[in-house]
Length: 271
Image (cartoon, rainbow, N blue to C red; front, side, top):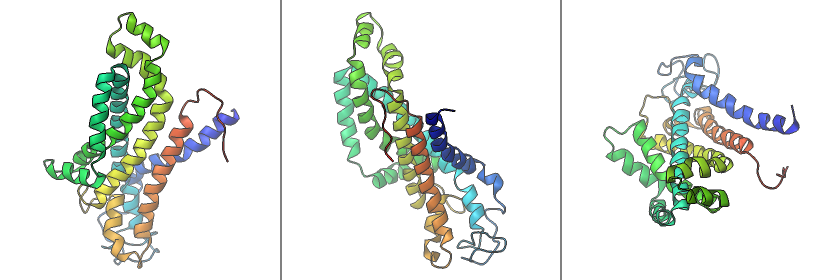
């Protein structure tokens, strides 16, 4: 194994382990997530390794069960935002008039505060819920991502082989899918990591505002909101889900940066 491969594996492994733990967490929980096992805000010990929450439920069990929906929602949001921004950015680079229109619309949507956007979409969505949060996160994420994608696609669209393909009569979708996007792999992978981190924070914000998952669901952001009044009694009821959200965002972003193909000048590692 080469030194670079070993370094990439070391940066990717924590993200894989954390994602696997979040996805398998509901099956690893030692107690039912809605069953009291201790006194409210009980200190760690006995059957509750991280203590009890505001209703005496096991914090560890709810922590293990509370990450799966957040991970799946954030992955879906990141994939939709990255894919949509990549296509729109490539089309905008190949068709400047369309690109200017996309940029103007993106500028307008970027003026909408994230919290206000979440509330507008989720409260107007029938029954609200997880799909409303996903829709809000996609709407709020595409304007930022499309500008980065368009900037990366512009020099590719102006290259000789793309101009030759266009002059040869190739259709727009062929140019987008076969000529431009394959040359943006590094940028799009890094963008996916950034949008996953942003999606984690947006989905968690929605959970904290209780416009997504509702009690008694096990959700990391909801755990922070519900247990904040008792943080001095059992800090783990708030600290544990907060650390989980931060570590998830950090590890995935580092993994995406490590997996991004290097091109151009030789990369320099800064310690």
